[in-house]
Image (cartoon, rainbow, N blue to C red):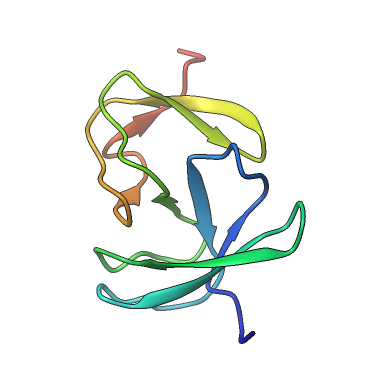
Length: 95
């Protein structure tokens, strides 16, 4: 199967987490869903640091971000599949 570059907790999640250093734009990532150990491929559209999120589906401003099966915030900007999701386009709902 190879070494995963992106982990997704559940099939309902709309973002995954980069788990390798120096992920470069254009990389076809090996993605693993930890819930059932299934895998899929997704191309990174930007350089994305380890621990940061990647959009698994198109996300629009106002959409809820789901990671680990939980609501972790809302989009304040758009992200296409494979785009970097971080503080520039995603914010917590706590404040």
